[in-house]
Image (cartoon, rainbow, N blue to C red; front, side, top):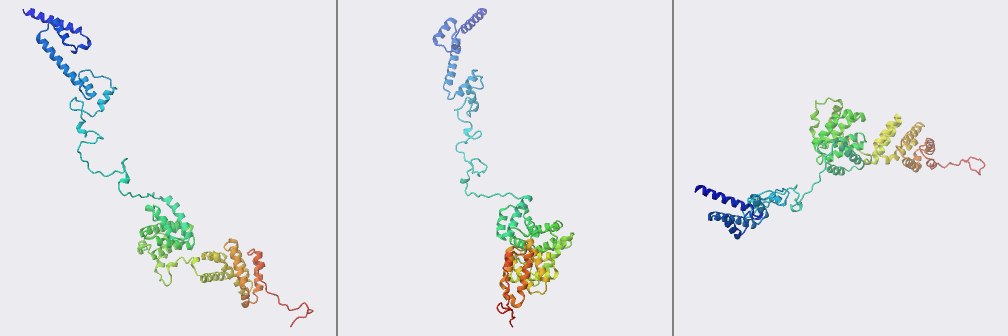
Length: 468
């Protein structure tokens, strides 16, 4: 009986497997109706237990199929297919890309909402009800709006000048200042520059340029340093500038032999104008090895120790020609001519005339020279003055206009001069002829020289009889 039962079960399984082999491809998953099932039962001789088990399997498959069709997202459907072994293996399909980049849960559970309530990941708005802290605006932020950040302050950034650019920039400013003499304009130009830690070099460059110029240039430089002190330059900057120049004196002497004395006068004037501290000279006592620097410091010390009644440091460079009174200039020119007649040195006379710096007043020198010739006795003064005027004319120190104006003034005042000098007309004619021969004056100026009317001692109608 046992063997018969086993044989029947084996036969029944074989029949069922044979039936499944002949099922269509779409019906293996139980997609057939109840009529087909009854036919299988009849042909296969299923037992009631096997039939109930088979129906339970069909119901489970139907539930799974219903859950797949009611899914809200195609990704969930693709994920369910992968669980059942039906997911596509193509990595480039759009379904696989959406599944990778989607923020929703891929576990097949939940309602398809974003992870962490929308607060997960980078660049999200955050969870609902989240309170953000106040953040300071970042100027480097691409969305930074300066108009909405309150008052905006704009600042001009000027690069700092290096040593080469400093010298190229300062030299034209100083040279132009020597022409107009306006310290406020220089102050304005310096404030526009970013001198940085080279600020003190402005003073040294200005003094170096004035050493090679005239006395008026040195006076203007002293005034400039005094006006800039406390505004653009500090006492520390002034001290560093003069300290640098004391060290550079051996090089300055090559171009300006009188540099030590001039630098000493600059130091004394700066201390008197309160541009340098009074303790500047005390810092160098017993610490200077250079003879030139020692000479400059001694010169400054002597000038500061003198009484103001004897010498005023305001006039340490003298007074410029344009600022001197006319009487003083006339006195200086008379002294110049007398020293020349005494020594006969043309170079010294030329140097003194240049130091007066009054090219517009050189006609006074010509006038005084001609008057001295008329008032002198002998031919020595006449020959020396012709030589002097010729030298000034050839060097261009006295221009044609100044020469003509000087002689014309003598021509106009000759009648008055003749009262004191009876032979003034004859001396004047001789002097004018010599000047014309030496090409000092023009022919037109010579011809315009007045001549005294000749007194008639013999009348043409008197027969040659001399009148008594």
